[in-house]
Image (cartoon, rainbow over all chains, first blue to last red; front, side, top):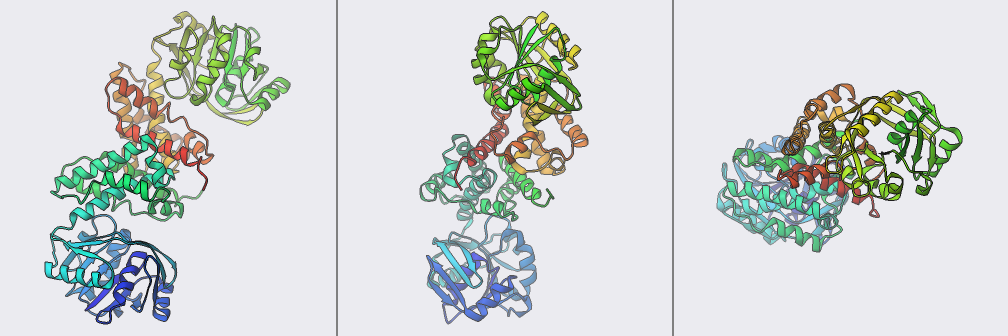
Length: 306
Length: 306
């Protein structure tokens, strides 16, 4: 089996490193960060933290290097989905391509370029410590299933799930993976931008009663949009907010980290995704629209001279 | 006539300086900034910019110094209304006390301490350059009228308006001053926090289509709350937003300046005021509540260690 990881940041590197441990799988890692690519090719790809892995995927920043694959796993930031799949689609002519990205809307873009698509959601998180070395901060499962409008077969989905699980990343094959995806989406859209706009860690934001109500109202809009699509959520996102307060009180949301570093955020695939799907299904989402506009404005401010 | 200005920051200093030009008025300036008080007493109070005034109010930081007055003019930030009027109320036992502050809810607090209250809204703006010296940035009118639940008489309102106008601050006496107050309130609540949350100058925020829609939606909630109270606005606040884009494109809202300096804002008297009056009159204001919560969260973040 040949698999190419498209976008080998922290998340993509987890997939590449775990899969790269198996002798029967040829793993390619495509990324535009030449230093990361060079380090992987010269020293291998190393995971520390929760994971303890050292493996040797073939890394490249040149799409033409990638041979025809059986699977693609897209792990770029949602901002870069189109550019990444456009560049690499030739390698996936007879492949099933799976998104494990944040937000919604990525599978739709991938499906414009390849014929069989898998919807995915993954919980493990990490960060690149230095080129070739990724710290895995948390474990957690991955859920995958056929992307309805242009699906991979369930057999292909099960084979990928089995391979990932055997490689050390527990992955569940689902007939309908939308429940997992929307549960994570709604949670992220209701909490990430609150951190970015206020500068507050998750637990501290939850302890501000007015702000906690805003989070619940954002969740409620997302739940209504999921229900209008006939999606059964895995769990109550509002309960996840409280759970995260318990286990990650001092956690600064990734979007807050983006804001502090003046990096463009994934708001368009999070709150923007809820707004767009809401529009398609006639569900009003005024609070998610407001949050989307505010984050977009904040991003714009970073482009202005003082 | 004896008048005491309560809170002698930029706005209060404008009132104190203009009134202090008249020989027939004894003007007291009460403020807790001892350097400003001492400078006024030793060198007089000087306006530059739009105004060019040098006058000699009697300044003090000790409430017991203030003799019985005919009028009080409260010009503190809305955060400090209660502390200021509580400290000075003894001087206003037979006075009419007028708020010229931002937001709503100040007159209600003042009315807990004195018997005759005047509702007011003022447009001139400025900033303290150094103790005893205020730069007046903009001119503009002041509107005053009886505060309905505990009103000063129209005669008292007219006498104060005439005195201010003759002193150089054009002031209109109105039977109902709520229209002017709510017009400014709705404009401020829809634009100030957008600047504070995004870091964008007013005109730049207006040019972001998604953000401009949020501003209009905030305005619409405020207009609905005003209508529910039977208030006739002076003008369309949404048109004022466009007008301000023309005349003050690069202006950073005062709340953005507060945010950059990590100073507590007046959000509770702006968006919070719209929310509270909305609640009293059964008008939902979810966007103003969200903005209020976000600004409050941002303020809270400044109190945390990094």
